[in-house]
Length: 186
Image (cartoon, rainbow, N blue to C red):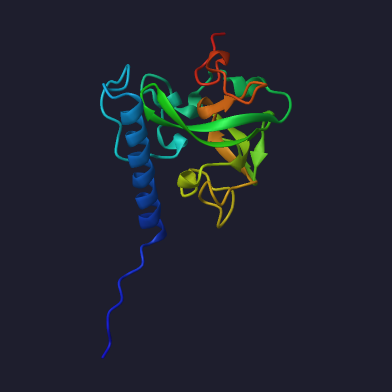
């Protein structure tokens, strides 16, 4: 007699499952770090972690223009050579989570990545390492067929929102005072 087998999840269902799992892990970490609530929190973080470009506002702020109109400058705009960096995702209005380390590439006018013009507000980054729990993170702009998660993008160039690229200081740590995570004045 034929026995029905459980249906395998689709790629989208699996990606959603991974996003929810990562969001849950991050919320647990925040709860341990901030037992009385996150300072400056204006509400609960959503149950879903999305690729940085999925939020239309610069650095997830709804008061700023969409990345296509973003004219702010970030630390990544000023590099002239391949530079170590960390890749972050937004959790709440002013809180981000590091999910990978890589190398930011200098930006050139009219830049093309994998045959497509680079989106405004974005930059090229080569993914070098990430904790295993973020390997399933779905990329907004997959660089090629079959490379659609952070884990499959290891040692590949990807597109990432500039406001979530944190340039690392010489000692290997991101320097929050270098303007990397917020627009600079001027």
